[in-house]
Each structure stands twice: as C-alpha cells, then as structure tokens.
Length: 227
Image 1 (cartoon, rainbow, N blue to C red):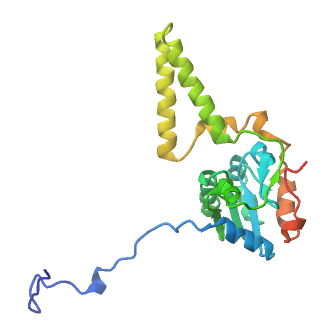
Image 2 (image 1 turned 90 degrees about the vertical axis):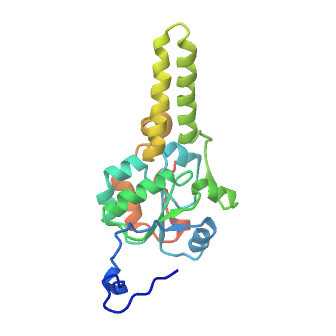
Image 3 (image 1 turned 135 degrees about the vertical axis):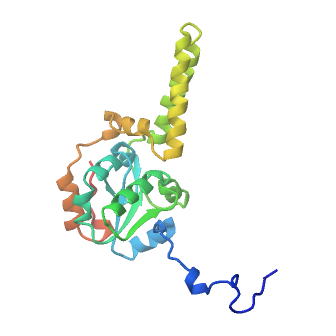
C-alpha cells in the first residue's frame, strides 16, 4: 500500500531527483565466448590473445596465434605491456581464474579493451575449436591438488607416530580456505616457478616486440614460447 500525504505535509516524500545518488561500482568484467572469439580471429579482427598460464601449460596446448605471458611476469611488467597494447586483448587461462587476476592488474594500470575468454582453455576445447598441441603436461590446478592432497594425507598418516604433524594438515586446510576466499593461490604461484612449469627462457623484449611489431593476421603471428 502506498501512503498519500497532503502537499506540504512533513512526511511528504522527497522528489525522486533529490533521492538519486550515483553508485560507485566497479566496471563489469567483459567476457567473450569461444565461438565469438574464433569468428573474430577468422575475420582478421584486431585482437591479441594473451595466455597467462605457465609456459609448461602453454606448450602442452594453446590457441593458435596466442602469446604466452605468465601471470606473475605480467603483473611484474604490466606497465611495459600497457604501453604497447592498443588493440582488443583477450586474456586466457585454464578456466578463467588467472585471467581474471590478469585483467584486474592490467585494468588498474589503465589498459582498456580487456576481455576474458569464457571458460578458458577448457571452454575453448569443449567447443571443438582448433588448438596447437605439444608435450602433455599437468595443468597448474591439478598439480596444486596433488601436492596439497599428498601433504594432508602424509601428515595425517605421519601423525600416528608424530602427533604434531596433524598441524601441518590443518595448515594446508587453512591455506586452501584462504585461497578460496581471496581468489589467490600461494601454492600455485610457487609451483609455477618450478622448472617443470617454466619451459623456455622468457624474454620480455621479445614478447613486447612480437605484440607490437607482429602482423595482425593470426596465422602469421609468432608464438612467444614456440620451439
């Protein structure tokens, strides 16, 4: 029921315009579905695909024409990339989580025209779209599950002989809980620095040169980590 008040009444509602206030909200993250991205690539659209997974994951499977810039290095050198990227940028990872972190870092540095591939490489492959494949490697998320699970299992079994080992399992559980709440993963960042995940030697200048001087046609792009 809407209450009606005589004009001039102390409880008469204020004019709507006086109640309106601009809301301070973050810009929503722009996403692109795999099929739309594939169509844009085929049409020769001005788009740069930046894969922020580890070099090992990238060498295992990646979108043709993508550039590999691991998340930790992208964060460290984001100003250099922002100074040279003037096209639409699509960020890619396994499922979208790391791409979201990369998008936040680049957006904070002032880079516009950022998009995240919906579903990451999992979504791209599920759509049956073309990929380049190399040596099969475990993705980073799978490595985290293996290491965390092994540590928990080992500490629980070991606590039979050394009771204090149970606190290691508790610490791992707490770390995983914090990772979920903060949308970060310290264990994943540590594992990404292992030789297994690093692949070829990363060269910032080489990647920047390819991003800025390479041809726009996806078929002619050189990969930053190709061997």
